[in-house]
Amino acid sequence: MFLQNVLIASEQVAILYVLVAVGAICDKIGIYTEKIAKSCTDLLFYVITPAVIIQSFCTLEYNPETAKGLFVAMACGFILHIVSALISTVVFNKCNIDEGCIYKYSCAYGNCGYMALPLAGAVLGEEGVFYCSAVIVAFNVFSFTHGIYTITKGKGGEKVKFDFKKLFFNPGVISVIIGLPLFLLSVNLPDVISSPLNYVASLNTPVAMLIFGTYIANTNFKSIFKNWRIFAVALVKLIILPLLLMAGFRLAGITGTLLAALSISAGAPTANNTVMFAAKYDRNIGLASQTVAVVSFISIITLPVMIALAQAVG
Image 1 (cartoon, rainbow, N blue to C red):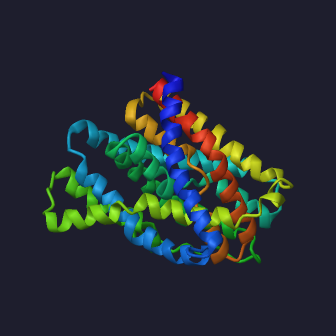
Image 2: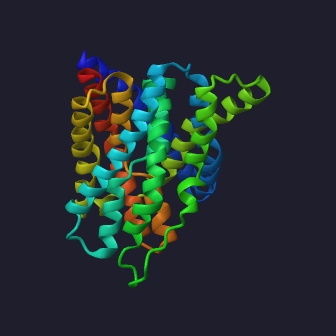
């Protein structure tokens, strides 16, 4: 059964990475370059991903079990990020400030939106997307507080200022605020709204994977092998953290689709926000891009195993 689950998950991951390969090829021949892809990131972040989250709330039928699972998933999302932040800080505490901030952020924050959501949809269906959406709330809260602190700490001795508006007024949280009442009240949206919502949501997987393909195409893999710390990030982010969290969640009594969804979120590769924050706060963009690319590439192997393991123990 375990090997069968690995094969099923591997097939789904392979499908996603075929789209990544298409994106990489398009970049190389100049019809969809990294520069163009970056301009599509806002479309994905502010329009498409929220549509996916709202759709997941509208699709899943309300019952006491799914309602309980939603709030458990949200609580587990906060636990996930607390543990990840603590471990990443300890592991990379001895690195120099300029590189250490990248390693810490890339280790603590996974690609909950662009990778976990489409993968959960492919392997677990709408219920998996529903639970992963709850984790995104925790991701946004931590990303705009601890994440910014991590990236900017020690930068010119300046104090870190948090924009508390972003804790609540960001696409992930707003989408949940819209979708949650629809789920709890079992609201059936009219076709004139639900159909466009479904059309936009269906863009999530192909657009996210094509964008990522352009990042892969522009990564200098030769120089990466000289930096062992990137592989240390991959080891912690893709293997140690998901195994630790999976074991903790299972001991807490979490099973089934919820455990698998949490495991996908915990084992998701480094968030694309690593590159965006590095650019915004004048950090090492090249190192951030390399780390995201390498960890994501290695996740082709690790994610199917983690998903199959979660399904086997749950």
